[in-house]
Length: 340
Image 1 (cartoon, rainbow, N blue to C red):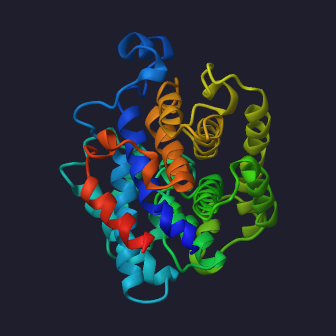
Image 2 (cartoon, rainbow, N blue to C red):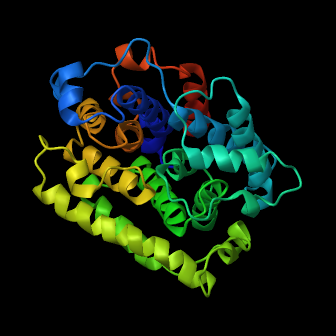
């Protein structure tokens, strides 16, 4: 963790940005762009709703953050030490009366199965699902200090696999956490897509046996390497589209048209990144662009907010917005812990 990372408070910036994007996109999800414009006015002037209510995206990010905090208080982060508290936090979220924000079906089905103490988590994992619920919540893995590359990659994939077991969900979660980490550490946004493509190529056939166990055997793949490579290949394809889009897309057009609507993991990553990269030094504009999309607006905007906040830090967000976001105290608490 560099001095500059701490000074800009990247963890606080990323968590608050994620929640702000989530709250901004909550009212526009499932809406066509003309309907959003009719309801909200010009997209560059979209205002944060009052009250600034978030969705399951932020709720599950906080659940993962709490689980990680508990695991790391107990010692070095490993799969067994991480799985239990994160699983418990996900089940608590599932059973909470506040779980009323249009959560994804995969998370609901998997968390219901995770309730059973005697069930291996691999038997709860939805092996066919690569919904964006896997990587909308993964930012904490990129923000906690003290993890090596194997821990960070394994942990990102494990938290996905507890609910979304599709190899593309695993790879997209790993890439999302890696992107947050690179930006928090000061990587230049102009080179980010290239760094992510290199990372995907390097990890293409690396199956994390220690973290994932026999998850791959639930699929129809002949080997664990074949299983995980399918996920990385889909991510590499969308990163290629993202690379073209960054150069060619007009900021005035819906970014979903270039990199996908974001309902699935690799498209949520790419479209969230596109919104951030179109407005690297204008984080609020990036959130507004992400929220004014025909796709999964809250998840796209929450990812754009995590990337922008990791890059620019806590001061990226106007106090008038940051001061009234739901769960503000908990977001700031985890951010302060990891920025320290």
